[in-house]
Amino acid sequence: MAEQDKVILHGMWASPYAKRVELALNFKGIPYEYVEEDLRNKSELLLKYNPVHKKVPVLVHNGKAIAESMVILEYIDETWKDGPKLLPSDSYRRAQARFWSSFIQDQLMEASFLVVKTDGEAQQKAVEQVYEKLNVVEDGMKSYLAERNASTESNFGIVEIVFCALFGPYKAHEEVLGMKFIVPEKFPLLFSWLMAIVEVEAVKKATPPHEKTVGILQLFRQSALKSSAAA
Amino acid sequence: MADEVVLLDTWASMFGMRVRIALAEKGVKYEYKEENLWNKSPLLLQMNPIHRKIPVLIHNGKPICESAIIVQYIDEVWNHNPPLMPSDPYERAQARFWVDYIDKKVYDTWRKMWLSSGEEHETWKKELISIFKQLEETLGGKPFYGGDTFGFLDIGLIPFYSWFYTFETHGNFKMEAECPKLVAWAKRCMERETVSKTLPDEKKVHDHVLGMKKALESK
Image 1 (spheres, rainbow over the protein chains, first blue to last red):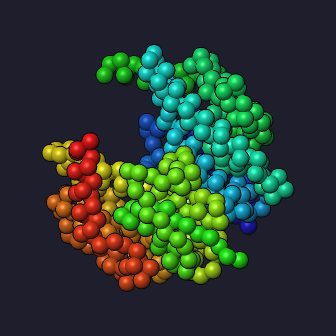
Image 2: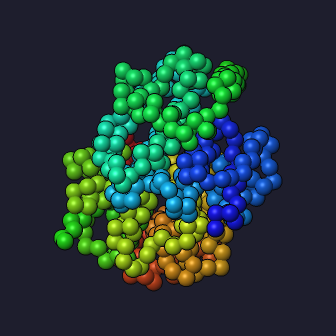
Image 3: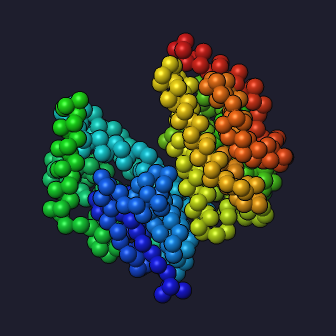
């Protein structure tokens, strides 16, 4: 049925949420059409497909829309059953994968954005918050990755996807912020894990040019600093 | 094989109720441990060191946290009838989307309404009502969110029914007037023993919330 499948992804190239879906589609080898959304001027289609949140990403599969990146990842895994799986088959491992993806999503996304949006003391505080959460992930990944059964579980799944979508642009983070999130001395496991993840073909395919990422990160940072100065 | 299943929970938690309903639907025998959230047990701190929250399901010594994750785990491990998740991937995605919506919106908005007054309180009250109206719209004309059968999204939402009286009293509105179809759905769910035996008495919940507010204010 693969020839008859029509898959469209509404995304925004710098959105880590949309990036997750790109990574999943790439990893599964699913051909898709990509629609770049201007988030300041959202398309009629996006508003029609995601009336509740009006956000990217939205996956449209044979005319049916699915929103929320984590929901989309599970949908992709359940629909395209051939090839590598994004979630473990063991129920307990699945629960852990869902838990860690959820943790990174809830505890690290906003916290890292805050580092980008602030400076001085506020930024220092924000950095400490992120490091505190990364400590938890460093510990958690020790057992989560060690308990992975290499014969039955892929080494690139939803946890890698969520982590990579956020921390993959580490070179741009370092250039714009003058600091690292995944400090090798503090988080040796996360660092080596990230270095392995960014080499995965599906990830390389979805990595925009460095200058472009630096550009948008700088724009995002400047505009946030300006508006908080004006406030 | 003798499964050892323990649930760490508190009686008034909507999130804990989801797990209790799911276990009941599957006929799983388990040990219930009531937690005192002002004085968390060593077991809770050991089993959920990261969030220190209930509910936590402990299955043969291994903890599973986060109610939506626990319910899916229950459905996958005890995969006999009745299935809690729809079988179609698109329907499953819809169910997950709406449980995520409930988790993002309902409790936080209630809490903001609860802890505010005046104009702010009115704003949050309107927001809370509009969230339930959205959920009512999603139900459409179906008897359950799962269609003909009670499922994951029904389980995700029905525990909030035991809190309706509390919302109504604090917000000075009537859920039945605002969302009659939703209330009809809730009453339909209450015809299931798994639900009616799990949901606490709404007045008890209300008294408990009043008590919590006093405790918060005295801190």
